[in-house]
Length: 229
Image (tube, rainbow, N blue to C red; front, top):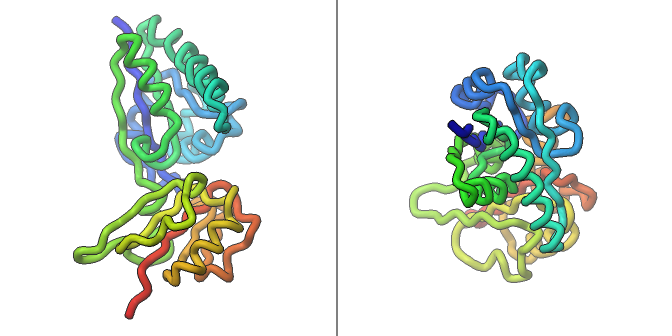
């Protein structure tokens, strides 16, 4: 029988946020895939190994996931990632693919899953704590209350008028466009909190647009709430 591909969320950074199911699947399976060039240096591995020390003794599969807007490069990268995973599935081995946060939210893992499914293999998604939920908890604020709406946007693709709808906004992976994002936030008049590297040793919390540095890192998540009247 062919193996199963599991897409497992490890949460945003704090190993204590990993689910019992994620821990169990890592312990029960020998092949663990992580997105990156060197498995032990990836963020997902460094999070998971703190909760599951025996991960260090597993067979690790480093999977390169291209960070580019070039469609041809993306297609090639995703195909090669699926090829690497399929080699184990053909042998009847399960593959546990670790991904940050929750695998259903802007996860590059999903491109691999779709290709594996197209090739006739079984897959399963295992939810993790999303970064925006963890960031709100870290900032000690709610995301939405009563009848408020919640909008989740990838900041890299955010238009100038992105914050014009009622409700509260989550801006994910804002680092590369931080200067532009800050200008949009200032014009919006919203109450802003940003958490950088949530749950990690390098975590920083910023209150208000003026506190946010222009050089914030890739894992920078912004919560922009409607100003209280």
